[in-house]
Length: 240
Image (tube, rainbow, N blue to C red; front, side, top):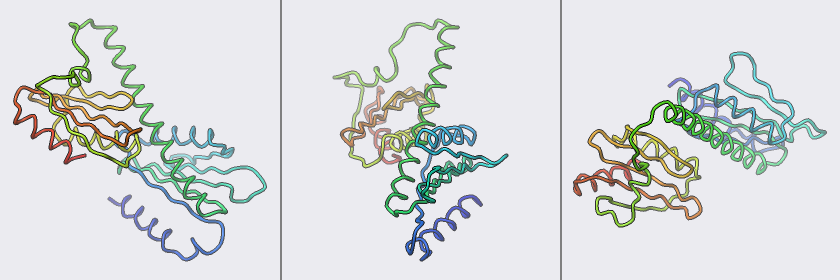
């Protein structure tokens, strides 16, 4: 709570200070939610993204959850950046300093998206490796993957709904995970490149797919009871 209040105060100060808009350098601020990271994974992703983006000086002070970085060239503010990881609040903050105001904002938003995407990909890789180890050590009865089971064409036990979204693929998948959990889908939780799916305690299966190229989100629920299935489908949409 203290982190959120501090962050809100800092952003308000940055946004409404006349110095921000008066003369260079300019500040660009981007904040985003990420429900799947911890501070070490966030900091590791931030360092990698900053280095790949051309920042030569990337510094993290001991025990700090902040990363400082800068370009090394003749221009004094092309660019400087700060990344703050607040895992306790599920928030990532990126602040960029540049000589051109629009460049500062765009760079902050771009770095944030790359860090979010990197932490999500890392989490997916960890889960897939863990599942692979389990599969190699135990040979369970062969069964159809949950995602394919839910998405059978012409299945009368599956209810489907769609809606448009302006979210990025990373933000969409974050919202999908939150929606499934808040709607009671906790078991067999897994995801792939564009979908997240799980089962609830009554055996109903839910799936949310983010079709970023079409700005579309698809919701699906599979189960025996049509009335319960439709209620769960509405709940997924409501919680998204």
